Length: 372
Image (cartoon, rainbow, N blue to C red; front, side):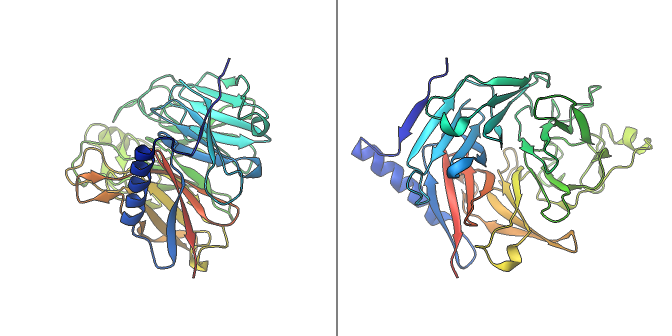
């Protein structure tokens, strides 16, 4: 039986409340945003918050990785500040990926996709989950997921490589797959994808764009992480043979050069080791017009680079369907080279055009607004 826990966002110990508020306000004061943009705290009691999705009545659902929890975040009075955070389920294996369809919450937990039916009416007393499928690989290395329903009504599920750099005979590894909502008819639509933890569909063309985390241990500045654009099902994006636009892997590059398979170059090379995760095409009316249909990326931040990089939101602007610029949008979660105040994971656009950002380091969800 699943037990639902809830935390009303009220501090019962004054000193603890004051410390938490001061910490959150310090993070907000550190953030650097373009003129006209503001950041505020939407929720501050969401441990290890990862992917987010919106259900009915504005309820926000969030997965986690290390915490093993799934959350329902409720803003009961519609003031854009969460009133209550419910734990829908706990002790799952890295349930970082979540999606929503027809009143049901889908959760990606390594090898399993779970479904919680009629969740909007039952988040306080959640139902037992239905196992949609348990046939994905169980390897934990890059096994955590980002999942989403596409314009075709199918559920898209990436499968990361089970290593830093290796070649597996199982075609599911280093791929993006899709399945029917009931878990049937799985197919691989993209190969050579080391570890995608974020994707979205272009609002006009319907093409899939996705982030990909580059391999480690080729130095501080190689290879770049990637923003990729799938233009045809079955395309290969290079891993483990080729990284970025023109970096052949020292171990597997020779094999790649001898293959007939063409490798698709990144649409945009991102910073080395920035760990790009969630991304969205901004389609709202709140931000300035030049943000419309442009890409925002959550860069989680490097973990093994001499000088840390990432820990920010970046913007990739498109011109005639191709990237024209790549630049910081929001920074400040990294102060100097050692003081990490937060690690952005995912972005979610609300109905009013504002954008939520999850932070698994602090368990915070921020709301970004614009006022000219």
